[in-house]
Figure 1 (tube, rainbow, N blue to C red):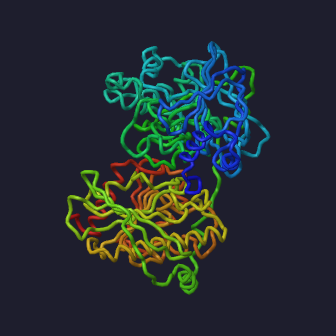
Figure 2: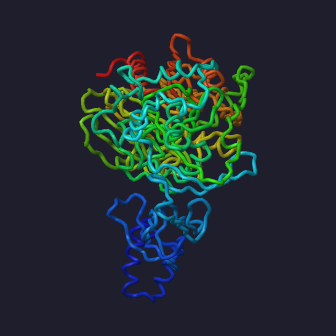
Figure 3: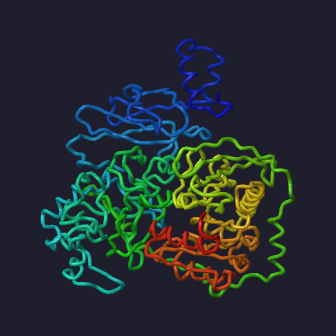
Length: 634
């Protein structure tokens, strides 16, 4: 079982065997291959300790003993722990037991798990204690331990602030109101904070109240100023980006994101799902987008992403105008421990770094591009394709998984085909290239179709290749960020070949229209839209959502500004006006100008929003574009 990667089943069987043959030498040899031996300590000791797999339900907790616990064998992978003791607040954490380095990991690897408990009366209600840490800036300062809200601030909690006259009391509104660099009076600014009926309150409320039955949902539609005023009202603060990052546990994203509220299906009540971060906070990924303290220019930073954004937004910081009250904006608070010093750099503004000036850069000449393009070529070869399974489990599509030979290394690759049920073949086809979240995920078993499911619902075929380095094809690449290394160059060439081999397979299908084939990419995939259509001429239409030029230098043979002028097919770029990853003036606009597509056949749709614009608006733009250049769906 261990040899086949069935780690959990192997661990369970070994525990059964240990009850019968505890001293068997073969079993003793196998244990280190399938488990990690650790010790568990609590402060104070004598607490009951429970454990379960990270994704298991609440009925799966197993009592493993009373601390201190020595020589405890645990399975590898993501785990949750709970420690309880009378008169003390329960401690709950999540961790990774790592096989390669034989450590249990929360922040720094060890074979000892330490859980701290505090007296119940000393623990602020609804908050968990977060261990401090170093600042990720050129500073020797350290953030002290602090408390953070376990959940996002709810409608019910914010209603208490409103009912207490919070909008009328200047004592809570301590920050100057800035709009586009202009200082507003408090009366002028606070008069903007009205609900749908013109009364004080979040933009999503009516008649000073939230929708019935949504008291435990995150408050949403609040500006940064309203969030900061509420924090003053309850004697807390908005977290700095450093406090937020320490608590969130971005290194744990591959476990947190699949259980989090991303994908566009609406908010859920706080704490109703299992998306817990390492120190016991819930829903830091997805659900409501959370305001943080720090400024970037005239904007304030949001973190965590929202329910209608892709999962990779979890650890992306997204500055937005502090007066904005989008229906995705919420927050949680922190409380700093008395008699601890907060480094000034933690609360300071984040400097705006100057990137490359693409206005001064020029693509390489055509003769060099011709040489570069040769690196992307591959010899024709048999596909040996196999349809692994086909299922029809929705009202909109039937799903197939097909596996075929890759163009390199004797590897096999897969692609998922989603074929519309209410359309007539041959289907117009859209090949998808995902965002950077695909690099962190290790299984394509349940693909997240955020931002692309509407394609097949519109009556087109959606094709989702499993590219090198993504999902179960992970190869140690930890990020989608480009760099100047030969390794990155080689990966990009392999991604291009994966696209090519996918199209090779699509051309064997009689139920697909070979003349109406589009490439659609989000974020990382959008960035690829400036390169891949230049070397893969079978792409007829391109859709780029949330893409632009990266500020980092790459090898010239995979530099986007060298290939964009060779992209000549109809191309739609959709961006958010306040995108921090690909800024409008320094990233989006230069790439749009670099595109070689005739002016009449390219469009740059700049929508209000951050990295990924509002869902309904971007869907309309994309379907209108596909209707124009593929023809209306049948």
